[in-house]
Image 1 (cartoon, rainbow, N blue to C red):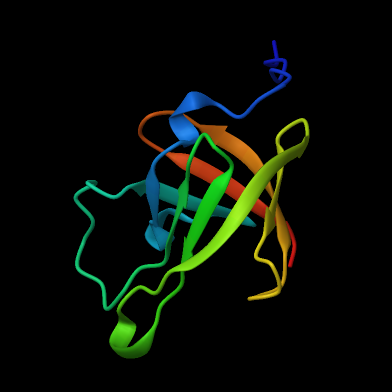
Image 2 (tube, rainbow, N blue to C red):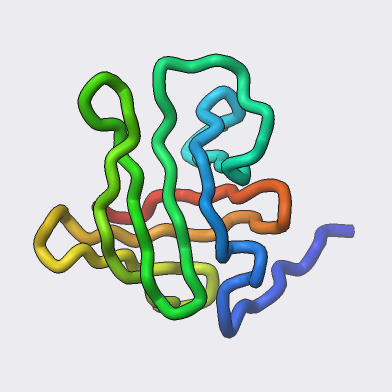
Length: 113
């Protein structure tokens, strides 16, 4: 019997934290993120992102010397499982699909941007 997906009217509460890209676990077109205190294997640098309940968002791209940067933005739920990220012109806006989210892992699919 297949599992019926749950309809989201708001993002899961586990989303509101700092997430770091666990690129070793990526599969197909899904990117995997873990909480920033996860015991990651050594890497030259890792991208990340932070979601806050008040709609603020911070993207952490790799900067100089593979150190993470910080680009502030905003998030909003567009439709079931889809989140729009806006950056006020600092970078292109984009949309993500939340494939899975709990306290230990975040799986997202990039839809635009």
